[in-house]
Image: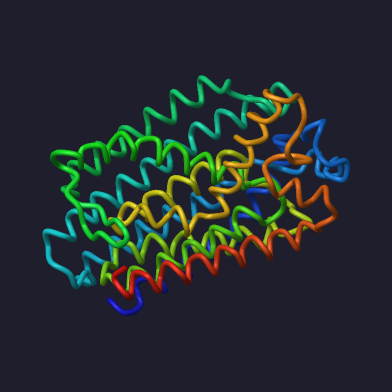
Length: 340
């Protein structure tokens, strides 16, 4: 059972997510939960107006149900091969991460619901989102602390303590790290299959890392995320029959961040999540440049829209961005194997 638990997690998540589309998408259409397209976006996106959104609940169902299934199987068949103390820590972080991701998804759900009801592309205000997401991020880090995490890995330095002296700076930095990356994943969700495609690659990376670190809890969670993303792509690849909405993208962000913290090497997410990071930075640069000069730095931000406005097809953007993510993951995996 130990050798197959991650496979079970991935397959279960894939099937649950893929099959749920058969009834979730018609239900979303019936409820008239359609996407509102930005007026200043690419004109060819107007054809997506009304496509069912909030499909992220399909991903959530796939991940949560498969993780619960695997945890139960794990206790029954004793699949965990590492020591009890470390298992307890990883189990707490697994639960905390899923709960944090669900809370982020709830914020996204409220945001999506407001957009739909008011028939506009703006839901919660920026201040409301920021407050709620920072609060959830802080609660998650409290759980990480009580799980017994005492060190974090810094490349070329090694593990450093985060419980004393300068190491305590880890926590305020981590707060904005969690908040920032969750929103970066959210910004990546702008064209058919992009966020789910990139996150599929990232989650597969964490599956490999779980094997290298001999930490099945990470493997189960990463496999569930990979399976759910693959299942969702069946419905979200161009032409998308459903969008994940903030409900799904914020959930994905929470999951990716938690996987990074579970490895005790969150700093590596800066490279593994290079696409997320560039998407977020492009928005910040666009806003700053426009405020200073009154002109746009990119034709449109996030940056995937800039490439789209320059003639790249949505499929090409998904392939290239996923490819870049794959290369970044390969570099980080090599670095971890070499203990860099």
